[in-house]
Image 1 (spheres, helix red, strand yellow):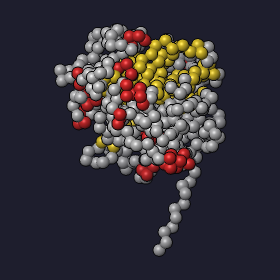
Image 2 (cartoon, rainbow, N blue to C red):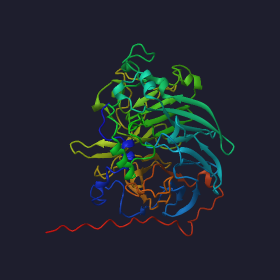
Image 3 (tube, helix red, strand yellow):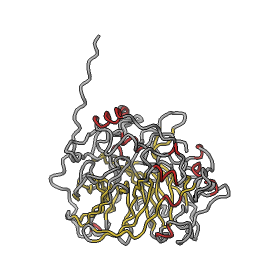
Image 4 (tube, rainbow, N blue to C red):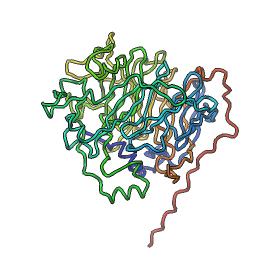
Length: 518
């Protein structure tokens, strides 16, 4: 698999410093200020006839989640115990939110958080679930099923030797062993209890053509339902101790970074969406530059196999799209996704229902060397029985997009990591350009009718009490959601602007420029 951009995990590990040099220019001139430093914040654009509703997001470096009205005023706050970043609103007004566990071991970059809390409308912690040990940790995203259960993405650390036994080539194995992926369904029990009632493990759905003596040997080109375990780039030599010391001294290393675990995060699943009628799960893997769909009607035993469930395919992939080179159909020119985030099904009742929206982060702009970002809407080739049409060419469609959004000048809408988009009830699309904390609503004709930029940042500290570096990701937001005003959570609630409003974060002035000697 050929890559056209850097690994987001590496960017986070290095403190997201790669793009700081782009903080120049103006908004109306192909602005490349990806982190949105020193630009106006709060409500930027509004229009008449907007759909009534609210913006919801978790404040960076804070345990607070805000609900913001169309006038840009905070009307409600949920307060968690730890720093929060991916909130989901429930019908009773409570919030299910991922929070950053303060003392998790092993993992430390690539989006781990380790804890989910359920917080009532009036701020009571109703449930506090932790999964953060030396083998597993919750990371990136989760989905709340209609029955209240949680579908969560989990890293699973395996050793170098275990990866070798699964058929991965030695030059592709991280020195401390890779982090594979699993998905679990959790039933909340009491204030801290939980019960895992279903799980799916990526390790059960790998194929390799390196070692014929291993049970998962086969031709990846003939099995798109399985993942070729030997996709990816060679693993570089371990970083030096001096480099590690320098990264730590600069506060850039991330928690638990060692000389040997960079690039352990092989697939970096970063989004999960559940379709209750189909009983299917959509997931996003930016390292593969693909979205994948699984059957969740299976039992755990069936999910570990290649048969069972409504699909009859067990836990194998039902569908994949974005990079057919991963299963040896086509080449890099056939790649459609570039380190994407936030795959979501469009819900019933919304225009485009049943389609998928995707935040495509890093599209090459040829012949320009700069990347740009787009929102894609695709119509998967769903069949009446819930399967997906595999074309005679051996790959999956579609070739054409149902809809897309890019900036009018192409380059000014750019978010190389995190971020997301989803369809609104009125047919508009709500977009979160995550690095800048920029939220905007676009019409089907791609006109921006509302825009708000996050002006808030909390003052949470590192576990040792040191302050978090405000640069470069000062205002960044992993997940933001538009909530319509008629959502059941708001029934009987008074949603008036808080008085006083939360204090906005003020960027310190830039350091003075040194005068050059004549």
